[in-house]
Image 1 (cartoon, rainbow, N blue to C red):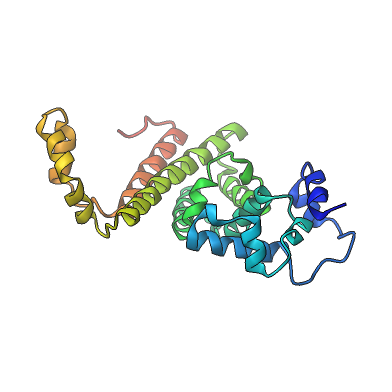
Image 2: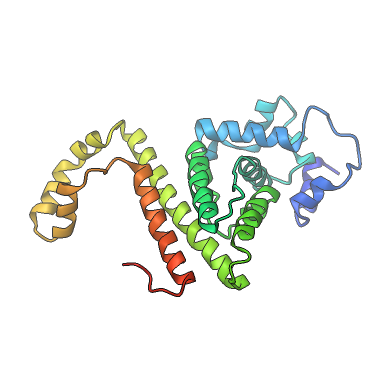
Length: 251
């Protein structure tokens, strides 16, 4: 039986279960799931997720094209290993206050996604790639921070998903803007605004967008992505806190 066919037959079994089983035959010591994931992450960081292919991995690792199939059934498994590897870097500090834990989770997740921009494509809440040991460990620590607050199980997960959805959505947009700027050769917000000025001026001159016009003329933090993220996050947390205390949400 070829390594590839064997990998296909095992695909129905959890990757993580397969990796914890004793190896039925000796495997090359030079190749491990961690080494596969590390090489794939390095490729994705440098060239983007689409550059990660089984053949490219084999070349990078210096092994035969089919060698990786002793460990993975295909690219989906490689993506899962990549997600698991980088989520091992994500810390959820044990804080005495749930809000501190949720805030740290959001800020650290944003930093992780900015360091590995390809992660934005693989980090949507409830993605199948959420089911990796290290990502599950992050969820476990976050839920533990919410435990003991008098919330039922469904509400605890809803709170976590609210913070996660804000974090992933906001950071995904930030990454997309960065990639657009890189693709267009723009390095600053002023360069972006200069390039888009003809379109923006025409739209503003129609008189249809007075609120946006006030923003464009009065905003001073247009290029401060971290401030914008933290401010939005604080509003999310304020709303959660008010709901927990039985007060009307601020607004």
